[in-house]
Length: 369
Image 1 (cartoon, helix red, strand yellow):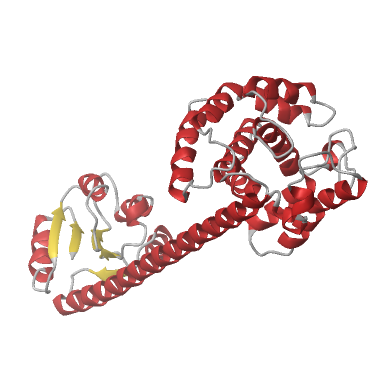
Image 2: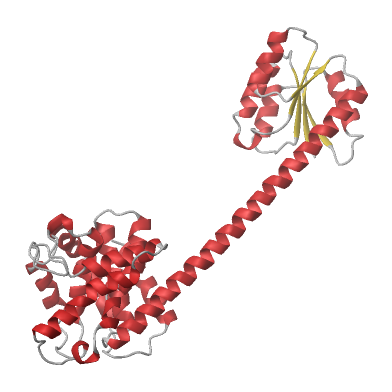
């Protein structure tokens, strides 16, 4: 245990040092100059401080006040040594942060007992602080594991859903990354963009309720088939509703609103403009762009530059102009993304590790923007 003894009297310091070092595991750092003690205390942790009241230049109360303003020293026990009997001095010392007082001349037995008691409290304080840190680490690790498991479940469920529609895991990843780029460009904070990134792969989860005959039909859909297909938005929201997970709640919003259109001609509710949740407006751009660039049973894939022009053309009708603007400002990175993450339609060999590797490459691209 490290104890600072601060007194302008060499004889008092010698007495304190001899007395204290008879206590097991105690080492005394003695200071005649209180300013020197303050400087050392900024880099050397103390377990207890003894300070005289009457010292030249700076008195004990002023020193205690300075000690309490040093972050790592704000809870160190401090004993003030004084021969003063004025109660106002003791009150001022307590207000400054003194823990206890010893009256000069100092009694050796009393000094030893008080130091042992305060050091015992200091040890207990450290033990509690260490335990609190351990508990915090354990909680953080547990939360990290839960978060990782939640993300894995979302991706695996998304992959299973996408398989029915002929999509690949990397196509889901592209939608997620483009949505994240748009959110970043719109000025969303990191936590919110991460929720959109993780939730967006579930945007079409409601297609589990659409029959294969409709979902995989190569030709145009008739009115009944179109109604069944459009039902996937509301059904997806129903599947994801009432979750305790913020990511799943975000996914429910996206599932229900990503087919709404800026001009009010979308579905399922015919919302328009800012009445459409921003998460849905963002994913609408990312999803349609990826759909245009991807092969489907009923169409060939568009060239990325042609798909880009189509997104720009539909600004203000299908899409939120602000989201299209954000998409366009990131176009150089999005175009590169579609080159780096291009995979043949129907290739289902992509692993979770490959998805994460691709996402890391794209994240680096986004950071460079």
